[in-house]
Image 1 (tube, helix red, strand yellow):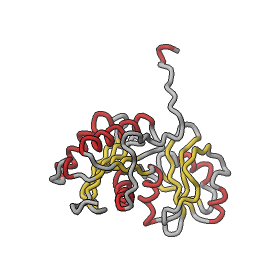
Image 2 (cartoon, helix red, strand yellow):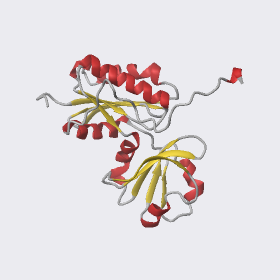
Image 3 (cartoon, rainbow, N blue to C red):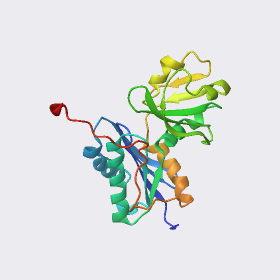
Length: 231
């Protein structure tokens, strides 16, 4: 790795939250977040420019770009990925991809106090994308789509307190709240800050993606809807 400080720009666009963060050798320099639906294409580049300006750096000071790999919004992931790949191409620096759900779990790992972590991303109706990990971020249940019912996560809830959080977790409250080990944590969104912390670990281990062939982890194929005017 180069002798200069490792400055990693992280991009999170998997959900309606648009977030960017800048870390130097794993330490946070600055971050910006915008909680505005369908704002990614209009504001992502502006947020990156503003963040670099606030940190008195330029694009050429970056040593890697990290991007949230999904699952999440098809459009959001495409925007984040195309921006990250474009920067990596033009700057000739590595691309790092981090699981959106694992980054969400990392954000709460220091306050889990022995509980398991179950981040959830809304997948419409009663379905969510989720994983289950412990506070050391060891994955106990891989990323998958789950249609929630009263038996969801029963094996984990039987053994441990479980923290449910993310924009899909509200669906679990009515179904699981009577279980003594159920814990709901409101107000948690994907963020580029924990994404950047995981990216620093990946950078040190040289876990990079092929910029030419990398694609986000959509989990499900994209299906375009029929415009209402044609129905």
